[in-house]
Image: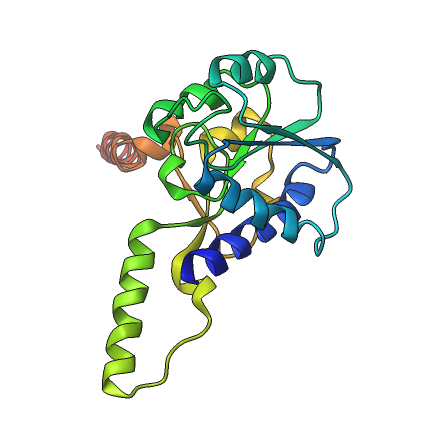
Length: 219
């Protein structure tokens, strides 16, 4: 229940936010595997889009072998966004590991890639509302303790097991303005400018120069 509720919430928020972050989007391409667990999330996605307003077309690539999929992703039409759902197996029953798909898929895609799975964050995806596997365990443990001790059980699982976060590098790459990012989102992997990185040293050098100049004029 926790996984279902959190993933549905994350997917819903991501579908809504894509229209704000990239208003020029014309097509959302959903890529997904053909394994039982993959189709579990695809079912969630399809049920959610019926309840969400969006102004772009949705296309699907289900169970396509990854090598073939990457060829297509490398030549997408302009104003296309990719949404990644789990790919554990393709139609040929070829198994894949997420660690092997990222950053391979984003690095070979000529469009921004979004997903709800935090395990792929930092490997070429833009970000969004994401679920953490460790948060599931923590929440389940706390809930079990509350049940055993007779304390009220928190039913708002979404806020407990999801986080809104974005990769600054991908925001820059795809021209996404920070002001369009949802409030209370965390932006990671920000690259400091030369001034930001050496701010203290620069201020110290300027202070010493001004001090030396003042001493010279005081002579």
